[in-house]
Length: 390
Ligand code: F6R
Ligand code: MG
Ligand code: MG
Image (cartoon, rainbow, N blue to C red; front, side, top):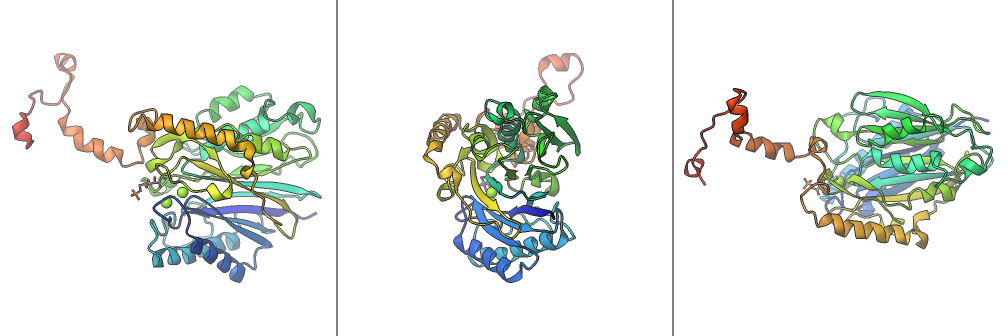
């Protein structure tokens, strides 16, 4: 049986209005462009969450395929033209390069791809997040593949009893490690718990019926700030998960999002807030440019087609998660610009806050204790307010 590939390639090419949502003309243009130019694809589905355009693709070209990536780049360019015509906000925001060079990675858009031998029946879910960062996938995917309190199959199903392996990337040092669950569970948590630095990239089965070298889950880990060297929007991530028969059941996959965990992102990529699971209709980030959202597109994929897309978070069973997320939103918002609603300073490095702090640097004087020890360099004479022009 030959391999098939499911890819999600996503970019923010302009928001409507502001950074909150998606203009329908952008999605129509993507649909039209892929239909007219997508001969490299077997099938596609155009989706969105908040201001992010998500191209969900089926093909047989494998990961990192130049033709597939170029098609998406060109689709984003075509959609950017529409965004410019409509004067949408941040037109072409995530397209950080002037030209395409072989692979879309590193150019701004986010990419998650799974290349695998298709089973007789292949349930697969695309999770799309807005106003947050790739580490937002750490907790739900950990729960899915390593926590028996989420995934009963880890205990009950012999096909899952050997557990799963986690490929984790250190996005600061640009290195990766593969750790095995359940043996190295605590080491996995040690890394994945630090979600702004260590991000889950892929999950592989340790045993059971599926090939061990074919990933069963993948996440985009592209950090826009590290590409551009400055804040250019959060790295709103996407993830793909296969389900059932030796893998977490669809219900176990979705259950992992019933807890609205606190993630970073939200307004100006500078705030902590709850990740709210929503149906497609509610995939818009309005209140304080948020709160962060996750929406899902679930498919029964065949080698020829993605088939019909389902909207699993529409289920009223996620209403309590949404209610909790709204309560957390009210509570956190009352902190205004104070931590822990605002991110800690080290996570504000790529925002505009350092420019504000830099403006204050000449106003600081050393504390008297430091001066007495001879450690102070700054002048201790306070400048009279009048001289400062107040
Ligand atoms: C967060 C996001 C928005 C913007 C905010 C300010 O990822 O995109 O919250 O940061 O709307 O946007 P500018 O600086 O473009 O006015
Ligand atoms: Mg935007
Ligand atoms: Mg976005």
